[in-house]
Image (cartoon, rainbow, N blue to C red; front, side, top):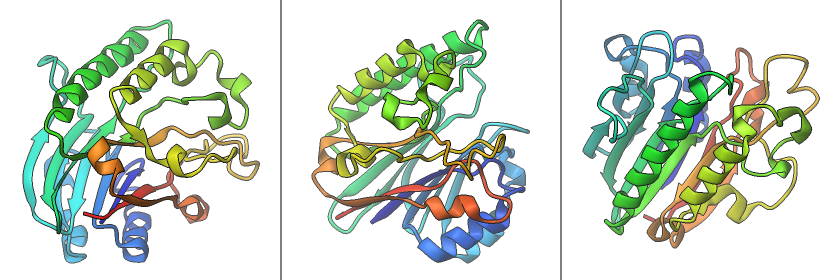
Length: 260
């Protein structure tokens, strides 16, 4: 079972690019972030024509997450628990039946947190605390569980081409990185780093200053696997070539294969 994550940076702006990738890679499950569309305006038909079941948790103009699956959904939950007043559409979770066991996957678009001197940074940290609490409860189910998406966290200096440029950024603050480590320490395996220790492994290149052409990237899109999922992981990948397509997102797809 191939499970992919991609911050597409707007489903309407990126529709043809996304459809081309789906036809090329044909993931069993795809989790999109930053769809930038309310649910009723999401262009469902072209995805359904490719054989995908679709669930969205959208918001007008920004944020928004979506789940696509070739298998029917057994369960779908929208919104991250812990704050009923939070109206930002940043989390959706689904369950599908695999050939040997169910697979649960939480698709997240973690807050950016910039500028750090505004209320946006405390919101990011509190959101991460809620994610930690939800992950801890979900791990008790002892299921194959993947928590994947755009984390807006650069875990280590080697995850940035120029780490010194990110010192004042919310993505690289000690608090952000510590909370990401705390999440990992619940028992998750960070799939890309478990299979690829190389430097220069990135998932995001800014549109500005020739970042893509200079390979001035960062790695902020992560796949966190529960012990039950990690034990059946058979491979991972980053579809870097997609960043070179016409009208690309500034992120590229990341994926994991599970024997499920």
